[in-house]
Every structure is written in C-alpha cells, then in structure tokens.
Image 1 (cartoon, helix red, strand yellow):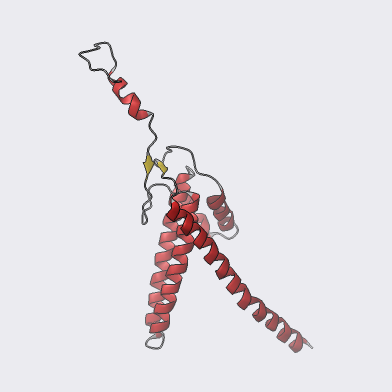
Image 2 (image 1 turned 135 degrees about the vertical axis):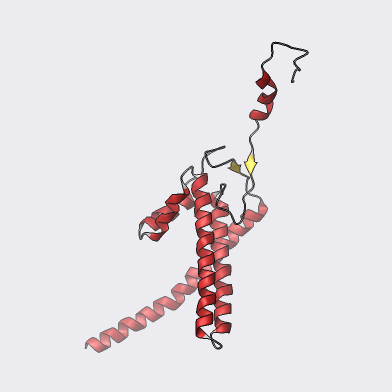
Length: 183
C-alpha cells in the first residue's frame, strides 16, 4: 500500500518504488542483435536450425548458379557464409552475456581446441540468475522453443549420421587403395 506525502509527511520518496523493485523483469530475445541475453536452449536451437537452413539455401543457390557462372556461385555462397558467421557471433555474444561474460570471448571460436571448450561452456553452463550487467533475465522457454530444440537435436543427429554414412565408406576405400599402392 502506497501512501501519499499528504497522508504521511515522514515517508521517504522511495517507499512507493519498493513494490515495483521486487518484481523480476524479463527481456524478450531479439533474433538479430548483439545486445541482450539468450538462454541455452534458445542458443542451441537458433544456432543449429539457422545453420542448417542457411547452408541448405546457400547450397541450392550455388548449385543453380554453378552452371551459369562459377564466380557468381562462389560469391553467393560466400555471402551466405559471411551472414551465418555474423549471426553465429551474435548468438555467441548474447549467450556470453547471459553468462555475465564479455562478448569479446566469442573470438575464441577462431582458435582450435579453445573453440570446442567455448561451445561446451555456452551449451552446458547455466546463465546468471536474474539481472546481470548485460540486461534482464531472458523470458522462459515456451512450447515453440522446446519443439525447436527437439527438431534441432533431430536434425543435428541426422546430419552427423548422414555425414558418417558418407565419410566412413570413403575413408575405408581410401585406406584400401593406399594399402594396394604400398604393396
């Protein structure tokens, strides 16, 4: 209950703000931004689904332009590659903000071994509770985020499985040819 100055002349001016200060505020994640915070599940879902989508679109665009002009297909694929790289950096920066770390740590993705450690840190470590130096706590995950997370896991495993189904026989054939030439 707030009181006015006329009712209680000895009340401090901050008294009316105490009720709103105890309420926790949440920030809505923005899709294309380097500011704010993003949780683990959204981070993983956005990263996997956007990567698969942009690689698919870039592959189709490059394949359509390849018979016409090789350099044009390379430029198109390069533009898609740059866009997914910038978007991935924005996701890394926002996830680091959720962990109350500077976004500059996202530059570790350029260093071998450290990039794997950074990804493990970003995916598995929980963000700071409540407000931190980079903003309010992100909103909770709704049904759409859970569905996107399940879909990204499914597509991620399918992608790795397909890659293994193609790479292992090719590697075995390479080993056999290498052994035959060595004899």
